[in-house]
Length: 255
Image 1 (cartoon, helix red, strand yellow):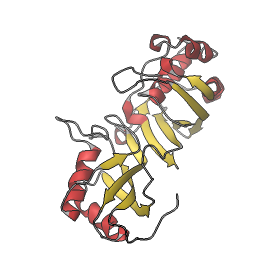
Image 2 (cartoon, rainbow, N blue to C red):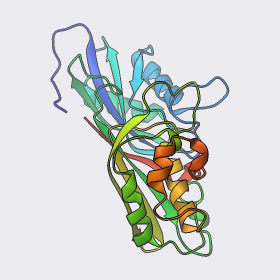
Image 3 (tube, rainbow, N blue to C red):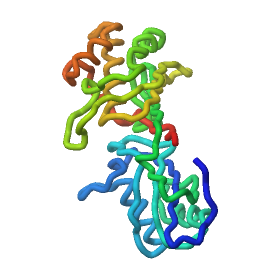
Image 4 (tube, one colour):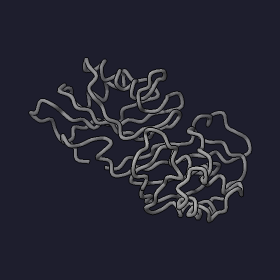
């Protein structure tokens, strides 16, 4: 993404990149009875520039989900320099949220609609005894995971498919459920197993249902070659459960 220097135009369009620990937050989008990332961010912006302009987030994230990279677009007529804005926002944000970059971009940039793809990582602590320091940051799975078998099974996700079977249906999801998964990998690093998926877009709970389906395969409740049939069924009941939010990280957003 090309960054621009300040122009003479009255309105500026800012691309703001943040990271956040979602353990005690209720996702991105503002809710009436819960604290969210957007609420914290808008309050910080208001404290810095005196008002809260309209902001756009790159994705909806659920309660307990984390983001190593989350992108916001914000239009403002305030002249504060990008580096000063970054420092000022970080003074007002809680420790669970940090601004890593602020950049002025073209007027056409939109955090959500300009996005070409995202990568998510699901983190699993795979050992018999849980680790209290991983609570809220990884799923504890005490039984051995066969990463080679799961990685092979997961390749059926790759490609352009209707992922209705891997979506929790609600008022947020409408229309075309087709997405293109560019890659899916399952690998081990010591006591941790990672499931990494990159796609042009994701449906509500899509990654967590993909992970839950793989865990059901590991448990022998689904066959390793069952994913193509689950995709074809276009039926949520055919797939596995929705894995807990604690292990999910929005890892990178592509523009």
